[in-house]
Image: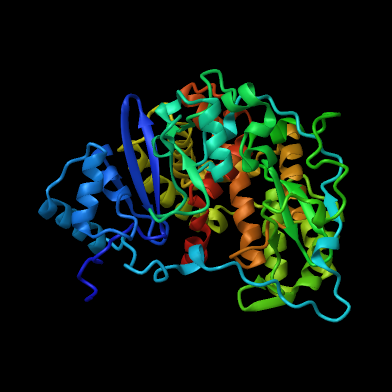
Length: 488
């Protein structure tokens, strides 16, 4: 088969996410190529045709299968449709073993333990101290993410409890699409109605919780916003600052613990919980690495340091110190006593890159997302805020303004949670991740004026930092940081 010839038994590639959205009364499926960011909108009939392409049927068989579901098409038209998808790089190979990539690869065997190394299952769970979650139950987190995953048992339970939702009681495919591609996979994604989980009731309450209690919700919803990462010494249990409830809980006594206190070691966790693992070596600065143990020890020292009144300035100063002197005590001193963040030019390329990515996404969203969709509005607010901050005088005035006490408390907690959960260690070198976090805080400081200008009163707007964090991770806007680093 030549590269220009579609597979004889086509299927949607695993790097393509198919997500069903109901916008008003119109149903549509959005294909998202995670490698390129390309979006393609399909109607219900086209999706039935594509969903029948599971890699086991030729085009004639696909047409017959789709016809049984009421989606009639002629074979030449179907061939042309699949040829277009193939030309766009959206189809996988005939053999399910090809194009498997990271999505289909079998889970690797656990690495052999070094002599004397502790069994990972025995590692203690180290929970973020002095924090309890007060959830307001208004469902902000159920309205902003692109994918809410259900395993087969969870999906079956949801359809049994709420068979009326999208008429999914007897038809799984009415309420769910595969997590990736069209080949059968272990997880499904629930359809969204105006950007909201289809099981979310009008007042923002989870109907699955209401009908069946908290255990009726999928595991990801039950554990959110808790994060887990194995750093070789312990499993750090922290919180993702991506929901207004997280920051509204700061300083409040009581609240729900992030983890059942009866759970002591990693082996006590539900085996389905995703526990990330820090790599053996981490990038500290471009071209400079350090061992996991060195980074963990330094991170603990930084977490114990006294944060400055302006956390964004501290992060920017720390980034420069890391690049100049590495993981030293002196670098931490630069964080505690930072240089003022008063030069708009230092932030300009970062803000420009984030604006470019947010503006592109805002234009795409406007073509298919509902105006009631929180993700669409939040993307537009970030695009507007970063555009305004592109004016040096306005940015300079914001940087010179004293950080209000409430904002400072939120920023310090956001950093504390990130350090405890090692959330600054990832694809970016640590020094660039620190600048990225500083930029996020500056954008969050500017958001209230933009939101107020629109008269928005959504409860998710009460905590701008959480809104920025959720949008950057949940909708791919965080890729701006790599662009900014290359531009710089």
